[in-house]
Length: 286
Image (cartoon, rainbow, N blue to C red):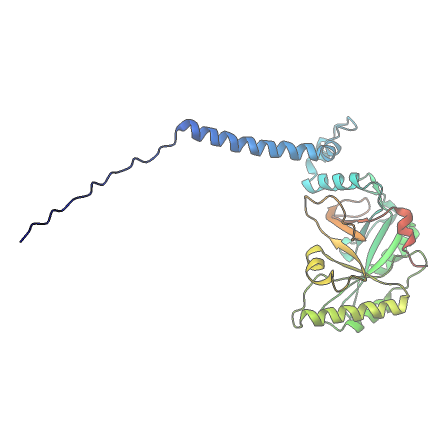
C-alpha cells in the first residue's frame, strides 16, 4: 500500500492595518471644518434677519428683546424681506382670543398687513366664536378680508356649505370664500372625500358667483388635490425652514404659524399673496 503524501498548507496571518493617529486627527478636523463651514454659510444666509433681531441695523441695544426671539422669527424676517413687493396678510380664528384690532399695525413691527382671512365655520354645525367680531373689526380697520370654512371630511358636505353660506355675507372688496381641508377621512375613501369637497365648492360658488379657494398643506395638495382640482386656486401651507419663495402655481403661501403681530397675544399665521396689493384687489368680489 502506497503512502500518501499530505501537503500541509501554511496559513499566513495578515497583520491588521492600523490607522495612524495622524490620519484619525485629520478626519476629525475635516468633519469639524465641514460643520463650521455649514454654520458659517447659514449665518451668512440669514445675516439680515440676525442683524434685525440683534439691532445691528439701528445700532440700538435690545438684548432683552433679542434674547426672547426664536430661530423662526429670523426666518420670518428673511422671507418677508425677500418678498417685499408682494402683499402680506394673516389669518385668525377664535384661538387668537380677543384681538385688539385698533392696535394692529405690522408683522414683526416692520411689514404692513394688507389682508386677513377669518375662520367662520367648522363642519356642519359650529360657528367660530369670534367670527362676527373679527369680521366686522377687519372691515373697520380697512383690511381686505376673507372668510374660510374648516372642512370635516366625515360630515355632510352640503350641510357644511349651507352653514357657511348662512353665516358669511360677502361684500364688494372681500376675498373669495375659502375651504380649509387638512384631514383625511376616517370612514370614507379618498374618492368619496373628493366628491364631497367638489360638492361643497360647487354649492358655494353657485351662491356667491365666485370660485372658492382651497387651503391645504403642500403634501396634501401634491398627493391628492393638484391634478383633479387644477381648475381651482390654492392657498398652501408650508413651514419648511429652507423654503423662502412662493411657488408660481400657489395663490397664497402660509409660510409660518409663529409670527408676532401687535394687538394679538401669542403666535399668528402669516401668508404671502402671489402678487402685489393692486393684484390682490383685482381678485376680490365685485
